[in-house]
Image (cartoon, rainbow, N blue to C red; front, top):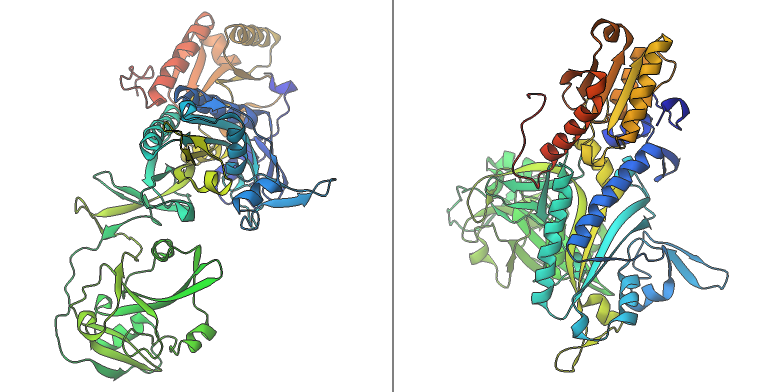
Length: 590
């Protein structure tokens, strides 16, 4: 491609609404164009990178035994109503067609694929069945941000599997897990699979994992340990490092704590460490029309994990009690505790609380707390559950090693759905005994456009993007600095020979200065730059090849350019592909 004829424009200024590097650089490097809030057009270079990601994903899905289909983006509302999700999906864009029928732009395709499956599979002999697609999705988020990392319209690969039993589901799940690892490893990305929350749709024995691309700008906080434990903070189960408990068994007593409604204020006043106090939080779990109030008890320096609380309550969602609800429960905001409750409410202690130790807790009276509260001694009928949020300083439950945190970008999410959709949509097959069963399902999503943006988050510097060879928009940026016709003719010949040899080359033949050309080349960030500078070429008859990743360079003769470029591309691809164990020597000597 000659840049003098290309549809391409770069920008010096950072867009005002671009908060993260990938958004900034994709806009500045002319990869995407914003058409509206969370809506982006994919421009030539951006689309080429997207298509390369799709190619890798397609190869690995096919290798895992999946078959590609393409479902409609516009989905009949009747399918969503049959599963019970029509009124639950708040991010779904719904409208009426000219037949006055309910339709929507698909944010996901569980209902659609179950409908497809139901028309074609009737017997266990046809299972497992593994179908996938790459398609545009739309989620009407109120606050889209971060460019392609959280756009409203995006390209996604979603796969769905159908099984007769859990053993079959587990086997295929493992195959898809391995396929996801291979996809990201082939792109040379640093990532970690983490245990994740399966939400209301997952049963207790369901597996669910997120594939997180590590980046400082990631929205998700991950809990990791050196022994390999990895979980999203929503799912992480850790234990606290050993604590010094207050074993004083003195009788419970009221103390005045005027205007002290926070753990910090009360503990400072009483000269007690915060883990010698208990934090009392009132929540309600909501399932359909039913509401259940709960008094969640934590050590004073711990935080509640609402995902764990919702899972424990088996609720559709949970929320903090309002001030009016606290009044109805006769609880004093800022001074709540589990002792001397005036109304019945379920009390649940976090599993890290030593129930035989003594604590400071709210006295359910304004400006008053209890000292000497011992849970196992002073109340009855409580429950115990893992409710706290993991944090730095905790220990891995199995190894006892300290955990640490990193931030990640969720590139893929795989989970076991069970029979939620096949049962609700009344889809069944005959098993080997002739009995009707609802097949179990697995779901496997990967954000194609998000992977492109996440790769940039991980691969950029102060000059611009630094593409891995596997998903770069092109292989080579050919920069020519020439004023004389003779040098320009030589450059044209080299360009033509590269094209004939199958090298995907961007040829900067524009009438512009070297500074302008090199800035654009660094901003676009193709893996290699081939430089023909007229002055140097006249001196030694050599061109220079620069590696964008680290600036390493070598010189080559014109007749060696094709072989050298092809060799460098092949070697660099292997160096970056983490599915390949035996690495060649770096041709740059790095």
